[in-house]
Length: 378
Image (cartoon, rainbow, N blue to C red; front, side, top):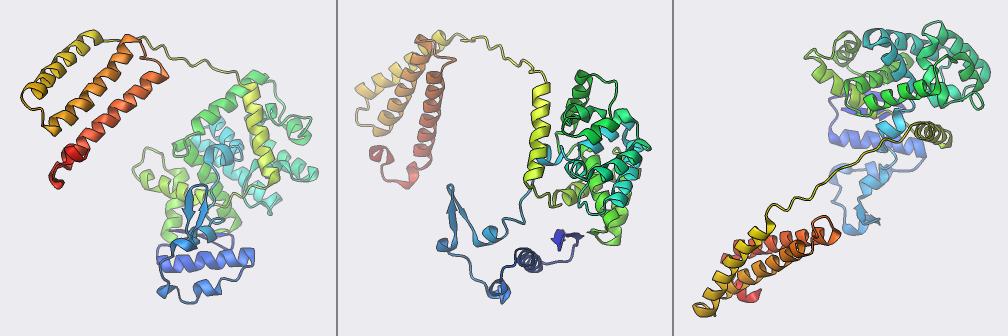
Protein backbone atom coordinates (compact mmCIF):
# COMPACT_ATOMS: atom_id res chain seq x y z
CA UNK A 1 0.00 0.00 0.00
CA UNK A 2 1.35 3.44 -0.95
CA UNK A 3 1.00 6.60 1.11
CA UNK A 4 2.40 10.10 0.62
CA UNK A 5 3.03 11.75 3.98
CA UNK A 6 4.66 15.19 4.31
CA UNK A 7 6.04 14.94 0.79
CA UNK A 8 7.56 11.49 1.41
CA UNK A 9 6.37 8.39 -0.37
CA UNK A 10 5.92 5.64 2.21
CA UNK A 11 5.33 2.05 1.19
CA UNK A 12 3.53 0.22 3.95
CA UNK A 13 1.52 -2.97 4.15
CA UNK A 14 0.23 -2.82 7.72
CA UNK A 15 -2.04 0.24 7.76
CA UNK A 16 -5.74 -0.34 8.12
CA UNK A 17 -8.16 1.63 5.98
CA UNK A 18 -9.01 3.63 9.09
CA UNK A 19 -5.38 4.61 9.66
CA UNK A 20 -4.88 5.52 6.02
CA UNK A 21 -7.93 7.73 6.13
CA UNK A 22 -6.58 9.53 9.19
CA UNK A 23 -3.10 9.85 7.73
CA UNK A 24 -4.37 11.32 4.47
CA UNK A 25 -6.60 13.82 6.26
CA UNK A 26 -3.77 14.89 8.56
CA UNK A 27 -1.50 15.49 5.56
CA UNK A 28 -4.24 17.45 3.84
CA UNK A 29 -4.83 19.63 6.90
CA UNK A 30 -1.12 20.39 7.30
CA UNK A 31 -0.74 21.25 3.65
CA UNK A 32 -3.78 23.48 3.30
CA UNK A 33 -4.02 24.70 6.91
CA UNK A 34 -7.58 23.58 7.56
CA UNK A 35 -9.08 22.29 10.77
CA UNK A 36 -10.27 18.70 10.46
CA UNK A 37 -10.25 17.74 14.12
CA UNK A 38 -14.00 17.27 13.87
CA UNK A 39 -13.40 14.70 11.16
CA UNK A 40 -10.90 12.71 13.21
CA UNK A 41 -12.58 13.02 16.60
CA UNK A 42 -14.28 9.66 16.44
CA UNK A 43 -14.27 8.16 12.97
CA UNK A 44 -15.21 4.76 14.31
CA UNK A 45 -18.78 5.92 14.91
CA UNK A 46 -19.17 8.01 11.77
CA UNK A 47 -22.56 7.64 10.15
CA UNK A 48 -23.10 7.02 6.46
CA UNK A 49 -23.28 10.30 4.57
CA UNK A 50 -26.69 11.57 3.54
CA UNK A 51 -27.63 12.64 0.05
CA UNK A 52 -27.84 16.22 1.30
CA UNK A 53 -24.14 15.99 2.26
CA UNK A 54 -23.14 15.29 -1.34
CA UNK A 55 -22.23 17.98 -3.85
CA UNK A 56 -23.82 17.83 -7.29
CA UNK A 57 -21.25 18.68 -9.97
CA UNK A 58 -21.79 18.18 -13.71
CA UNK A 59 -24.27 15.36 -13.37
CA UNK A 60 -22.42 13.55 -10.57
CA UNK A 61 -22.86 13.49 -6.79
CA UNK A 62 -19.49 13.96 -5.04
CA UNK A 63 -19.27 12.32 -1.61
CA UNK A 64 -17.90 14.33 1.35
CA UNK A 65 -14.79 12.13 1.47
CA UNK A 66 -13.98 12.57 -2.23
CA UNK A 67 -14.61 16.29 -1.95
CA UNK A 68 -12.02 16.58 0.82
CA UNK A 69 -9.51 14.26 -0.85
CA UNK A 70 -9.83 15.72 -4.34
CA UNK A 71 -6.46 17.47 -4.24
CA UNK A 72 -4.68 14.35 -2.98
CA UNK A 73 -6.12 12.03 -5.61
CA UNK A 74 -5.22 14.22 -8.60
CA UNK A 75 -3.20 12.29 -11.17
CA UNK A 76 -1.51 13.59 -14.24
CA UNK A 77 -1.80 11.58 -17.42
CA UNK A 78 1.30 9.57 -18.26
CA UNK A 79 1.15 10.37 -21.96
CA UNK A 80 0.26 14.07 -21.84
CA UNK A 81 1.73 15.15 -18.53
CA UNK A 82 4.53 12.86 -17.38
CA UNK A 83 6.13 11.57 -20.57
CA UNK A 84 7.13 15.05 -21.87
CA UNK A 85 8.81 15.73 -18.52
CA UNK A 86 10.84 12.52 -18.62
CA UNK A 87 11.46 12.46 -22.37
CA UNK A 88 15.16 13.16 -21.83
CA UNK A 89 15.51 9.93 -19.84
CA UNK A 90 13.64 8.06 -22.58
CA UNK A 91 16.05 9.39 -25.21
CA UNK A 92 19.05 8.13 -23.25
CA UNK A 93 17.49 4.70 -22.75
CA UNK A 94 16.68 4.45 -26.44
CA UNK A 95 20.11 5.62 -27.57
CA UNK A 96 22.17 3.30 -25.37
CA UNK A 97 19.79 0.40 -24.85
CA UNK A 98 18.30 -0.73 -21.56
CA UNK A 99 21.38 -1.96 -19.66
CA UNK A 100 23.81 0.81 -20.53
CA UNK A 101 21.02 3.39 -20.67
CA UNK A 102 19.99 2.72 -17.07
CA UNK A 103 23.61 3.13 -15.98
CA UNK A 104 23.99 6.40 -17.90
CA UNK A 105 20.70 7.74 -16.54
CA UNK A 106 21.61 6.83 -12.97
CA UNK A 107 24.91 8.69 -13.34
CA UNK A 108 23.13 11.78 -14.68
CA UNK A 109 20.48 11.66 -11.97
CA UNK A 110 23.19 11.65 -9.33
CA UNK A 111 24.71 14.69 -10.99
CA UNK A 112 21.34 16.43 -11.11
CA UNK A 113 20.84 15.67 -7.44
CA UNK A 114 24.34 16.95 -6.57
CA UNK A 115 23.99 20.20 -8.54
CA UNK A 116 20.32 20.99 -7.88
CA UNK A 117 19.15 19.33 -4.69
CA UNK A 118 15.99 21.46 -4.67
CA UNK A 119 14.43 19.56 -7.59
CA UNK A 120 11.68 17.27 -6.31
CA UNK A 121 11.46 15.24 -9.54
CA UNK A 122 13.82 14.90 -12.54
CA UNK A 123 11.52 16.93 -14.76
CA UNK A 124 13.04 18.48 -17.84
CA UNK A 125 10.90 21.59 -17.38
CA UNK A 126 12.61 22.18 -14.02
CA UNK A 127 16.04 21.72 -15.59
CA UNK A 128 15.25 24.27 -18.31
CA UNK A 129 14.11 26.85 -15.75
CA UNK A 130 17.28 26.66 -13.65
CA UNK A 131 19.51 29.75 -13.57
CA UNK A 132 21.84 29.90 -16.56
CA UNK A 133 24.95 29.23 -14.46
CA UNK A 134 23.36 26.10 -12.99
CA UNK A 135 22.28 24.93 -16.43
CA UNK A 136 25.79 25.44 -17.79
CA UNK A 137 27.35 23.45 -14.96
CA UNK A 138 24.78 20.69 -15.28
CA UNK A 139 24.98 20.37 -19.07
CA UNK A 140 28.77 20.34 -18.90
CA UNK A 141 28.52 17.29 -16.69
CA UNK A 142 25.97 15.78 -19.08
CA UNK A 143 28.25 15.94 -22.12
CA UNK A 144 30.98 14.25 -20.10
CA UNK A 145 28.67 11.25 -19.65
CA UNK A 146 26.57 10.97 -22.81
CA UNK A 147 26.98 11.73 -26.50
CA UNK A 148 25.68 15.08 -27.69
CA UNK A 149 23.41 13.36 -30.19
CA UNK A 150 21.54 11.65 -27.35
CA UNK A 151 19.54 14.75 -26.38
CA UNK A 152 20.01 16.60 -29.67
CA UNK A 153 16.51 15.67 -30.95
CA UNK A 154 14.97 17.90 -28.26
CA UNK A 155 16.59 20.99 -29.80
CA UNK A 156 14.02 20.83 -32.59
CA UNK A 157 11.36 21.71 -29.99
CA UNK A 158 13.38 23.64 -27.40
CA UNK A 159 15.17 25.90 -29.83
CA UNK A 160 18.06 28.31 -29.31
CA UNK A 161 15.77 31.34 -29.47
CA UNK A 162 14.04 30.36 -26.22
CA UNK A 163 16.45 27.88 -24.65
CA UNK A 164 19.93 29.04 -25.71
CA UNK A 165 21.86 27.27 -22.97
CA UNK A 166 20.45 23.82 -23.67
CA UNK A 167 20.55 24.16 -27.46
CA UNK A 168 24.14 25.37 -27.50
CA UNK A 169 25.29 22.24 -25.68
CA UNK A 170 23.36 19.71 -27.76
CA UNK A 171 23.55 21.04 -31.31
CA UNK A 172 24.29 18.26 -33.79
CA UNK A 173 24.34 17.52 -37.51
CA UNK A 174 20.98 15.77 -37.38
CA UNK A 175 18.42 17.36 -39.67
CA UNK A 176 15.12 18.62 -38.22
CA UNK A 177 13.35 15.72 -39.91
CA UNK A 178 15.70 13.20 -38.30
CA UNK A 179 15.33 14.79 -34.88
CA UNK A 180 11.55 14.85 -34.98
CA UNK A 181 11.53 11.25 -36.23
CA UNK A 182 13.52 10.18 -33.15
CA UNK A 183 11.12 11.96 -30.80
CA UNK A 184 8.07 10.49 -32.53
CA UNK A 185 9.57 7.03 -32.22
CA UNK A 186 10.15 7.57 -28.49
CA UNK A 187 6.64 8.92 -27.94
CA UNK A 188 5.13 6.01 -29.83
CA UNK A 189 7.11 3.41 -27.87
CA UNK A 190 6.46 5.03 -24.49
CA UNK A 191 2.80 5.91 -25.08
CA UNK A 192 1.62 2.81 -23.22
CA UNK A 193 2.25 3.53 -19.55
CA UNK A 194 2.49 -0.19 -18.79
CA UNK A 195 5.04 -1.10 -21.45
CA UNK A 196 8.50 -2.31 -20.48
CA UNK A 197 10.08 0.83 -21.93
CA UNK A 198 7.74 3.15 -19.99
CA UNK A 199 8.34 1.19 -16.80
CA UNK A 200 12.10 1.67 -17.23
CA UNK A 201 11.52 5.43 -17.38
CA UNK A 202 9.29 5.34 -14.32
CA UNK A 203 11.88 3.33 -12.40
CA UNK A 204 14.40 6.13 -12.97
CA UNK A 205 11.96 8.60 -11.41
CA UNK A 206 11.81 6.38 -8.33
CA UNK A 207 15.60 6.07 -8.34
CA UNK A 208 15.87 9.85 -8.14
CA UNK A 209 13.53 9.81 -5.15
CA UNK A 210 15.78 7.24 -3.49
CA UNK A 211 18.77 9.51 -4.04
CA UNK A 212 16.84 12.39 -2.49
CA UNK A 213 15.90 10.31 0.55
CA UNK A 214 12.19 10.77 -0.07
CA UNK A 215 11.33 7.13 -0.69
CA UNK A 216 10.76 4.97 2.39
CA UNK A 217 9.73 1.33 2.32
CA UNK A 218 10.29 -2.02 4.05
CA UNK A 219 13.65 -3.68 3.48
CA UNK A 220 12.24 -6.49 1.33
CA UNK A 221 10.47 -4.00 -0.95
CA UNK A 222 13.65 -1.96 -1.34
CA UNK A 223 15.66 -5.06 -2.21
CA UNK A 224 13.07 -6.02 -4.81
CA UNK A 225 13.14 -2.52 -6.30
CA UNK A 226 16.94 -2.49 -6.51
CA UNK A 227 16.84 -5.73 -8.49
CA UNK A 228 14.96 -3.98 -11.28
CA UNK A 229 17.92 -2.56 -13.28
CA UNK A 230 19.83 -5.84 -13.02
CA UNK A 231 16.95 -8.11 -14.00
CA UNK A 232 15.91 -8.62 -17.66
CA UNK A 233 12.26 -8.11 -18.48
CA UNK A 234 11.99 -11.76 -19.50
CA UNK A 235 12.66 -12.85 -15.91
CA UNK A 236 9.57 -14.13 -14.10
CA UNK A 237 10.30 -11.87 -11.10
CA UNK A 238 9.68 -8.80 -13.23
CA UNK A 239 5.99 -9.67 -13.41
CA UNK A 240 5.80 -8.60 -9.77
CA UNK A 241 8.43 -5.86 -9.80
CA UNK A 242 7.07 -3.91 -12.79
CA UNK A 243 3.58 -3.30 -11.30
CA UNK A 244 5.23 -2.20 -8.05
CA UNK A 245 7.35 0.34 -9.92
CA UNK A 246 4.36 1.73 -11.80
CA UNK A 247 2.20 1.94 -8.68
CA UNK A 248 4.91 3.79 -6.76
CA UNK A 249 5.64 6.23 -9.59
CA UNK A 250 2.04 7.18 -10.30
CA UNK A 251 1.54 8.41 -6.74
CA UNK A 252 4.37 10.92 -7.05
CA UNK A 253 2.74 14.36 -6.78
CA UNK A 254 3.26 15.86 -10.23
CA UNK A 255 1.60 19.19 -9.55
CA UNK A 256 1.21 21.34 -12.63
CA UNK A 257 1.73 25.06 -12.17
CA UNK A 258 1.64 27.59 -15.00
CA UNK A 259 5.27 27.03 -16.03
CA UNK A 260 4.85 23.24 -16.20
CA UNK A 261 1.70 23.55 -18.27
CA UNK A 262 3.53 25.93 -20.61
CA UNK A 263 6.34 23.39 -21.01
CA UNK A 264 3.85 20.64 -21.87
CA UNK A 265 2.08 22.91 -24.36
CA UNK A 266 5.38 23.86 -26.02
CA UNK A 267 6.38 20.21 -26.32
CA UNK A 268 3.15 18.93 -27.86
CA UNK A 269 2.66 21.99 -30.05
CA UNK A 270 6.19 21.64 -31.39
CA UNK A 271 5.72 17.94 -32.08
CA UNK A 272 2.40 18.46 -33.84
CA UNK A 273 3.66 21.31 -36.02
CA UNK A 274 6.77 19.45 -37.12
CA UNK A 275 5.12 16.07 -37.71
CA UNK A 276 3.48 15.33 -41.02
CA UNK A 277 -0.09 14.15 -41.03
CA UNK A 278 -0.55 10.51 -41.92
CA UNK A 279 -3.46 9.51 -44.10
CA UNK A 280 -5.78 7.01 -42.47
CA UNK A 281 -8.70 5.79 -44.52
CA UNK A 282 -11.17 2.93 -44.58
CA UNK A 283 -12.50 1.52 -47.81
CA UNK A 284 -15.96 0.20 -46.99
CA UNK A 285 -17.54 -1.52 -49.95
CA UNK A 286 -21.31 -2.07 -49.84
CA UNK A 287 -22.26 -5.67 -49.11
CA UNK A 288 -25.97 -6.32 -49.48
CA UNK A 289 -25.74 -10.10 -49.06
CA UNK A 290 -28.95 -10.96 -50.95
CA UNK A 291 -31.09 -8.68 -48.81
CA UNK A 292 -33.98 -8.90 -51.26
CA UNK A 293 -34.08 -12.67 -50.85
CA UNK A 294 -33.95 -12.26 -47.07
CA UNK A 295 -36.82 -9.75 -46.96
CA UNK A 296 -38.91 -11.99 -49.22
CA UNK A 297 -38.51 -14.90 -46.78
CA UNK A 298 -39.42 -12.68 -43.81
CA UNK A 299 -42.49 -11.40 -45.66
CA UNK A 300 -43.77 -14.95 -46.26
CA UNK A 301 -43.29 -15.84 -42.58
CA UNK A 302 -45.09 -12.73 -41.36
CA UNK A 303 -47.91 -13.28 -43.84
CA UNK A 304 -48.33 -16.85 -42.55
CA UNK A 305 -48.72 -15.72 -38.93
CA UNK A 306 -50.97 -12.84 -39.95
CA UNK A 307 -53.33 -15.30 -41.63
CA UNK A 308 -53.36 -17.42 -38.46
CA UNK A 309 -54.14 -14.36 -36.34
CA UNK A 310 -57.04 -13.30 -38.55
CA UNK A 311 -58.53 -16.72 -39.22
CA UNK A 312 -57.93 -18.74 -36.07
CA UNK A 313 -56.74 -16.58 -33.14
CA UNK A 314 -58.11 -13.04 -33.46
CA UNK A 315 -58.22 -12.60 -29.65
CA UNK A 316 -54.67 -13.82 -28.97
CA UNK A 317 -53.06 -10.64 -27.64
CA UNK A 318 -49.65 -12.29 -27.29
CA UNK A 319 -49.55 -13.19 -30.97
CA UNK A 320 -50.90 -9.74 -31.84
CA UNK A 321 -48.14 -7.92 -29.91
CA UNK A 322 -45.28 -10.12 -31.14
CA UNK A 323 -46.51 -9.99 -34.72
CA UNK A 324 -46.99 -6.22 -34.52
CA UNK A 325 -43.45 -5.59 -33.26
CA UNK A 326 -42.00 -8.02 -35.82
CA UNK A 327 -43.96 -6.43 -38.68
CA UNK A 328 -42.83 -2.96 -37.65
CA UNK A 329 -39.22 -4.14 -37.59
CA UNK A 330 -39.66 -5.71 -41.02
CA UNK A 331 -40.95 -2.43 -42.47
CA UNK A 332 -37.93 -0.56 -41.08
CA UNK A 333 -35.62 -3.12 -42.72
CA UNK A 334 -37.45 -2.55 -46.00
CA UNK A 335 -36.64 1.16 -45.77
CA UNK A 336 -32.94 0.34 -45.57
CA UNK A 337 -33.10 -2.03 -48.54
CA UNK A 338 -35.37 -0.02 -50.84
CA UNK A 339 -33.66 3.34 -50.24
CA UNK A 340 -30.07 2.03 -49.93
CA UNK A 341 -29.56 3.43 -46.42
CA UNK A 342 -26.78 1.02 -45.45
CA UNK A 343 -24.07 3.66 -44.91
CA UNK A 344 -26.29 6.50 -43.71
CA UNK A 345 -27.26 7.99 -40.36
CA UNK A 346 -30.86 6.92 -41.00
CA UNK A 347 -29.65 3.35 -41.46
CA UNK A 348 -27.87 3.41 -38.10
CA UNK A 349 -31.02 4.76 -36.46
CA UNK A 350 -33.01 1.88 -37.91
CA UNK A 351 -30.50 -0.63 -36.51
CA UNK A 352 -31.00 0.96 -33.10
CA UNK A 353 -34.78 0.61 -33.43
CA UNK A 354 -34.39 -3.08 -34.29
CA UNK A 355 -32.26 -3.63 -31.19
CA UNK A 356 -34.79 -1.78 -29.02
CA UNK A 357 -37.63 -3.90 -30.43
CA UNK A 358 -35.66 -7.04 -29.63
CA UNK A 359 -35.10 -5.85 -26.05
CA UNK A 360 -38.81 -5.11 -25.62
CA UNK A 361 -39.76 -8.59 -26.82
CA UNK A 362 -37.22 -10.24 -24.53
CA UNK A 363 -38.53 -8.22 -21.59
CA UNK A 364 -42.16 -9.11 -22.26
CA UNK A 365 -41.40 -12.81 -22.63
CA UNK A 366 -39.15 -12.92 -19.56
CA UNK A 367 -41.69 -11.18 -17.31
CA UNK A 368 -44.80 -12.86 -18.70
CA UNK A 369 -45.14 -15.16 -15.69
CA UNK A 370 -45.14 -12.24 -13.25
CA UNK A 371 -48.23 -10.59 -14.76
CA UNK A 372 -51.80 -11.71 -15.25
CA UNK A 373 -51.80 -10.54 -18.86
CA UNK A 374 -48.68 -8.58 -19.75
CA UNK A 375 -49.59 -8.56 -23.45
CA UNK A 376 -52.88 -6.76 -22.88
CA UNK A 377 -51.12 -4.35 -20.52
CA UNK A 378 -48.56 -3.60 -23.21
